[in-house]
Every structure is written in C-alpha cells, then in structure tokens.
Image 1 (tube, rainbow, N blue to C red):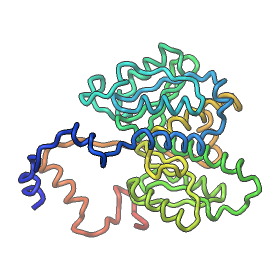
Image 2: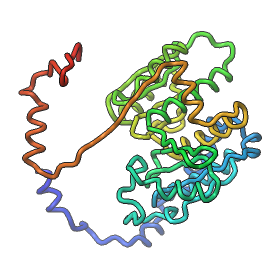
Image 3: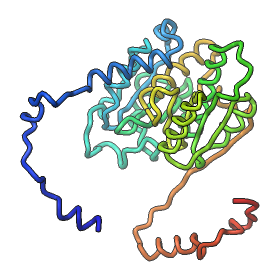
Image 4: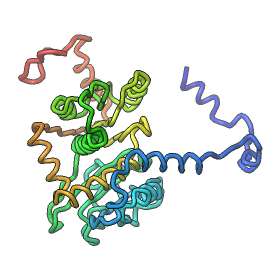
Length: 326
C-alpha cells in the first residue's frame, strides 16, 4: 500500500550534489524571469491609479506572519506606486517555528496582535497580512482614534474586491450593456452576497466545490469558451483578482486592496468599513460566522461522523429546522 511504499523509499536513490546540478547546462533557474513577468502582468491588469497612488496619505501596516510575503508585497506596492507600508519587523523574515504566534494563520484569534500594535504605534489605519506562503490575505481597519478595530472576514474582503473589480470593468467598458459573458466565481462554502451582487448588476455568477482548484479549472474552461472571469474568492481569505493567476494570490490581492482603500479615502472620504456598509445597504445584509471545535479523542470523532453520515441517508432536519432541498 501507499504507506509501505513511502517507508521503503525514505532514503534517496542516489547522492545528489546541489552544486553539480546547478552547474549542469540543462539546469535553468527561471525565478527572476517569472517574477518580472508576474509583476508586469499584475501591474498592467490591476493597477488603476498609479499617479494618484503616490499621493496617498493612507498609512498601512503589513505582516508576512513569519513567511515569504514581505519582499513580494513590497515590490507590488512599489510597482503600484503606493507609499511604502510599515512592516511588522518581528514577523518579516521566514521562520518555520513561527515564534510570535500560536498558529500562523491570519484568521486565528490573536494572530494580528503584533500587526495591530505596530499600526497603533505608527498611526496606521489599515492592516494587511499574508499567511506564511503569501497566497492568502487578511485585513483589519482601525478608526481615527485607534480604539475601534474591524477585522474583515474573508467574505467581506471578497465582496469588497468584487465590487472594486466590477466598478472598474464598467468604467473601462462604458458602452457594454450585455454582460452574459462576464463572470465572477466563489466556492459553495462562501457568501452568496456575490450572487446577489451579480443579480443586481446583471453579470454572471457561478459557485463551485470547495477549493481553488475547482474555481481555477472552471475559470480556465470559461476562458476557452470566450468568457471573462473578473474575480474569484473563497471565504478562507483566498482571492484571485483578475485572470493573471487562476489561483489564490495574496500578493496581488494585497496591492489591489491597498489601492482600493486609498481610492475610497481620497475620492469618497470613506473608510473601507463604511464602504462595506454601503454595499450591505444596496445589496442586502449577509452574515457568516465560522467556528471549529478541536477534539483529539478518536472515539468522539468517530461517533460524530457516524451520526453525520446517517447511514448513508440525507438528513431531513437541522436541529428544529426542516431541510427543504439538497
């Protein structure tokens, strides 16, 4: 079986010397080329206000959460002509022991404490955070007195970025009235506020199974059919803004969110949270609350899932509520 095969092949089949591999003419390192193409692509596709960005007075604190994101976000801010952010120094370098957090997930309670402290000490009103591999983005906003904090959920960031993408798509295509080939996607566990927004604006919405592989494959197929996918997201703070990367990307999402926040502040004298409230007023209020319970007791876990499986039959009720359809 798989485990036995793994156990039988724990040792390398041969001894490899990294220097000899890198010296081989067949070995190529495309990192710099791909990195340059990536930043050129996201800047061309997603940066809307390069000249105005440079005049922004919005101060932003950023944490890489002991991961790899800081140098890439710094490059994205530079290419978008955004003012430099204030970095959380204690969390800026990759460290697999994650010494300052209990768990290196920006969604976890307490994970943004150092970033919020840095923001308050430096007069920043916005906090951005990547997870350690920088494919996800979290955000929080402080009020003018630094005494009220709103940590945005993944669904809230999702609808904010969706609205930003849509408004700028319409601005770039003022004569278009048929949006039957314009799509946004999210996963089935994510907020249906995006569906309501799509219905209100007239473009197409699709949901997929959980995970970006499903959204990415769907977007790829839609593109082959001549459709345009403007945005995709999953509630677990994963976003694909535009079609440069058909996967969650916390770097491009971070630069776009920063530009959006700067634009709202400059043009509308709004905070991001105030703009979110205006979207709720327009589209309707959608609420989600994620929670999980840890259990290391195999018997308890087995009993829970045996009950949920219900002998292979669908459930007809959830608590006191009758399930109408599945």
